[in-house]
Length: 224
Image 1 (tube, rainbow, N blue to C red):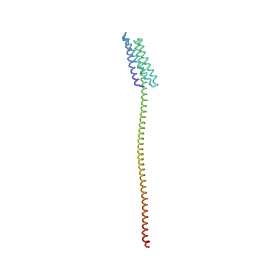
Image 2: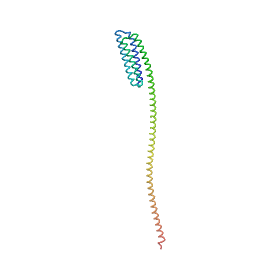
Image 3: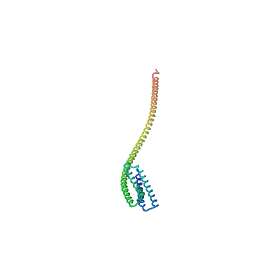
Image 4: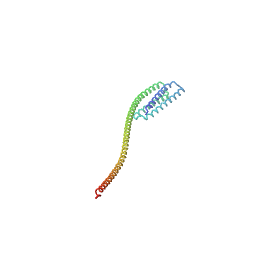
């Protein structure tokens, strides 16, 4: 329930009711057609008061159940006061009796209004406390959400750094594999050159041995 709207309607009813009461007190000063016209104005003012009470009843529908019954009783009392003023006007009992009765009615309404104001203030205080607790709970939820968001951002940043490290490691592994491939090719080429050199060296040794054997043969054995 919007307590602010209800308070505005309550203040509006107090103002309308005070005007209605004042008109009833002034009715004895009129007569004839003026009195009839003034009675119509009083009826219109009473209708206005009842319309304000209708608005208050609509606002009460949204009130907490613990306070709804008490507030409905209060509004029914206001309606009775308005109806009593109208009945007094219709019966044309505007003399001293009506004046004193109006005073009693106003006093009773003011007393009831004071009691209602106290209960309304208690209701507003309770609503304010509930609102404060809800606000604190929302603030805590916002802080937790902010902390969770920060933790998530840190994790994402850390995962991004690890991904970069993995990509660099992958690049190094690829470079290492390429270097190993080149090294194997170089080793195979060096192995082929070594074998070729060994083969050439063997051929050269064989040729030198053959030449040396031929020289010895021709030098020592050919003369005989």
